[in-house]
Length: 193
Image (tube, rainbow, N blue to C red; front, side):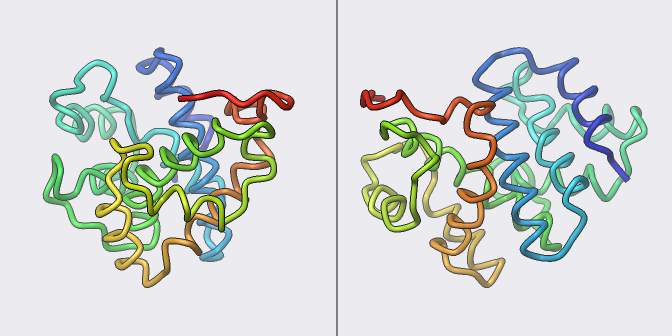
C-alpha cells in the first residue's frame, strides 16, 4: 500500500512548480477528509491524492500518459496507479472511477480548485469558509471558470452525494492546514484573483 512518505518522495522528485505542489497538498488533504467520511485509510487516500498529478509538470499535454509504467516501475501497487489514472476519466483516460477512492479523487481534483479560489478572496482565507459561501461561488460559473463544474457534479453523482456535502467535507479537511496550503488569509485585507 502506498504510504504518504513514499508518495511525497516520488512526487517531489517530479513536481517542482509551486502552484502544482500546493494543488497536490489541497487534493491530499481533501482526500484525507473523504477517507474519514468513508471510514477508509486516511494516509493511504492522502498518498494517492498527493501523487495524482505525477506526470503533469513534465507532460502537461500528455497528462497521465507517463504515469502507469513509471509508477509501477517504482513499486506503486496497480490499484493505486489505477486510482490515479481514473481521475482523468473522460478527459485523458478511459478508466472509469469505480471505488470510493477513485470517485473521490475524480471529484475533489477539480473541486479543490474552486475551494482554493473562493478562500483566496476572503480576508480569513479558508479558516472561516462555510458551505453556504462556497455554494454561491460554485453556482457562479464565471468564478474560477476554468474549474469544470459539470465534471464535479458527475463525480458527486458517482459518489451518490450532493456537491455541498462533498465541498463541506473537503473544506473542513483543508482548514487545519490553511497556512501550509497558503489559504490562511490576508489578515483583514481582501485580495482579488
